[in-house]
Length: 300
Image (cartoon, rainbow, N blue to C red; front, side, top):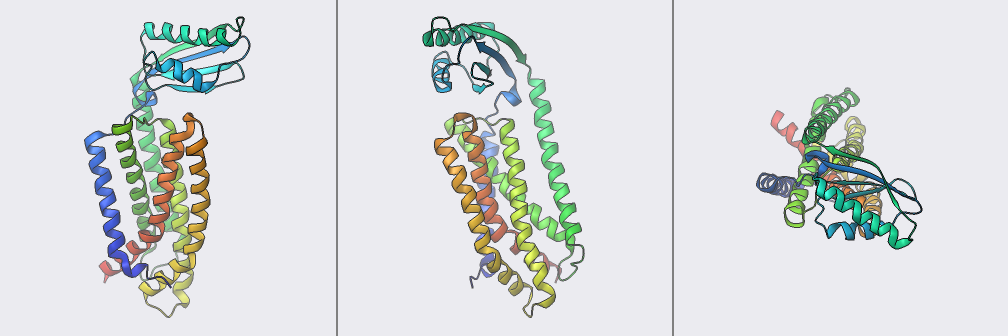
């Protein structure tokens, strides 16, 4: 049996170091916000025959210094472009490049512009506010749900403390993901958009699921265990350890394949999920349960 809970000082040290480093990175550099948050342009076009290859479009538009470019196919011949530039000059330059790409495939493959809209930063501010509210609501809902699910557990730790321990582990995961993307944004220009918020919410759901599995095993063992609380937690962790590792490893392998071979539009969404699920698995095993024991020792 692995002595997981007995090495809690090591796990607390690792987590504290990661959280401090993430907070420092965010304080120094912040997140590199994309057009979903800062505003920009949306352009919807359609070709009379077939659309050019996405990567070819990206390469050509990068030549005219288009910032925060997002390319979304809508059909075999339709494409939606999002980019940060809002000047009419850039709009016309993009239109010319897209038209030339279509004609290069076939001289009769002409371009039709169906829509062009400039999205102001006020929309981005509203989205940022809604993102913060969504994450807060999810966290409060998790505390309430876990407190209700463990309502019959009163010793040696009150039921609401299970919810609090789960949320501390969740915040640990979210802060680390934000810290990693602060570093990626500063050094590699990686931007965050609405997909990043979706990734954070997905990480919250996955991580709390893993934590609840461990807590549920602790709850099952408490009435019939002849060990103290520390021993009961350690036994429960060992009983659920391989299940958590196997489940997370299969998910991480899928995400890794998306990161390596997936398209640019979902690559960094997968990166956020990979980082979040990796540390979510870590926190479920090495952080959430030691926090429960810490609560019990404080009570004593």
